[in-house]
Image 1 (cartoon, rainbow, N blue to C red):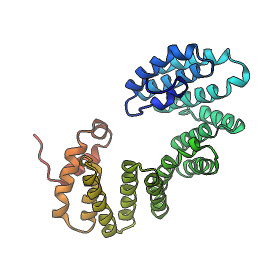
Image 2: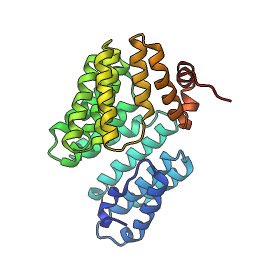
Image 3: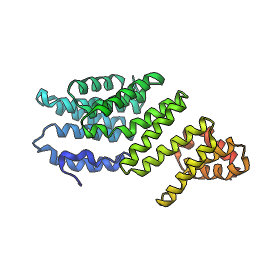
Image 4: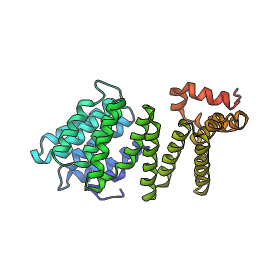
Length: 298
């Protein structure tokens, strides 16, 4: 354990929910005897989240049931935060498995309870989840609610949502083909991450901005930005990025430079074909990379 018991949330590694679950379990014994009786049910909601990220319905429901039982015996005023977190994780499970209303009812309950009790961080979490499960203008409305709440909050933890929210809003605007507005969002996103010295996230925002430039039929500008990204990745000793190669290839193709684009399409295919999710869910895209890169496979 790297943190004090009440700081267990800082152990989250969202890319590795199984390892996170194992670390969280080490906190269980300590939190059973902790003075703050709200912490143990909160821990179980996060164990449930580990399982939902692993698409394990039974495991997640077991942890949620345990959390609910612990919440029920708390004094009413102590139930507020654990209940909000319970609703968030119940909703995330339904969304992950695409069940019922994808958690809309749970997220709305979490939003209303968090707003009523001035729990800014969890209110923003609920709004951002509603932005994820909704489409088009409804998605944008919830994302803007979350952003405005984060920007106006005095809670620094609540403000930590802003980087993710600028990104989400940018991609929602992209889905609506409002590329100019999306471009501005990604510019804001890069600035936000740069100010916090989170350079890898800043590079992702920069890449997103370049993609919007291409979609705005400004491939020369997009290419300049992409080459800047490539140089910075090299300086920071970051691995080759398939998405970067793909976007450079798309820009070269948009400029009519078919022969020059082929090696970048090939590089993109070589790297991205290692991603099982892409190979399963983005088959047409991967076949296109393969074809335009003149990739020959056995």
